[in-house]
Image (cartoon, rainbow, N blue to C red; front, side, top):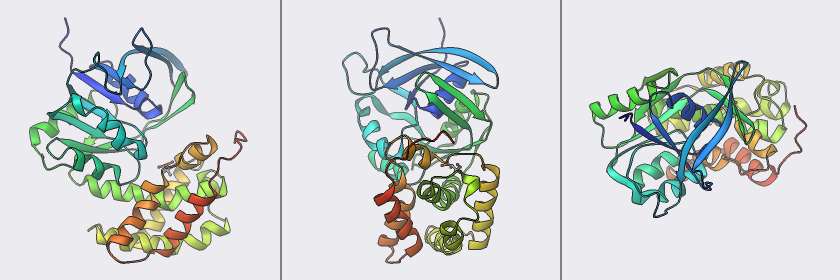
Length: 313
Ligand code: PAF
């Protein structure tokens, strides 16, 4: 009989499946899925470099059922930012005051929604540069090794709990470190997403094809000035020139990537724009300021990002 910790994973997309696979060596992983078959297991191919492994993991229903009602100890959440609140709410009857939750969402806003929903729970946010994709529903490709930072975002900031979270996540063998300034990490990632994702979605191009396009070249500097101001409101000091240099560095490093927003557009899915540039607009409203370049990008993505035909590029 094993006493390995049980980790529930909500959102079995590319990143959720990557973490589930890597954590399954030292933990009992349970995937929380909307639809489960009678075998109550989920199978996929996991490709890491040239090696393909078949992964089979037990699963439970992510919506309330009498069968799946055991309390959840540790919950890792990989849903899209706009689905997170509803998805965690569906599990509420399985969450106890000591259930720890780690949020891996893109953008900003879903983290605050969860800390407001569960003010008494230990809640963590993670920011990761691990790369994974799902070429089809049965296959997960580990596309690029990255790093993950995790830090507490709740009032229940207790150091032994944080050590536990770090040790659980580190059991994946992925590179994970604790970051007590996790909001700063999240804000920087948000700024980078604000400055890359909408342009790639509007121009239907890879990250590396942005520089040199009039829409990007004309707007990146004013946008970085707005991002500097909005970050200052949130006590993060990063000047516009540094931000622009960072954005261009990320563009270079991820030149061949199709951004997550453009992937969504091409797949005909809802984008996370409301939790990226939309979050900046929310801050603007709350602090009576205006961020016009951001607002134009937000409006253009809202109105014109209808799915593109996937050309396979
Ligand atoms: O959202 C994404 O795709 C990524 O965060 C980034 C940095 C824009 C690279 O593609």
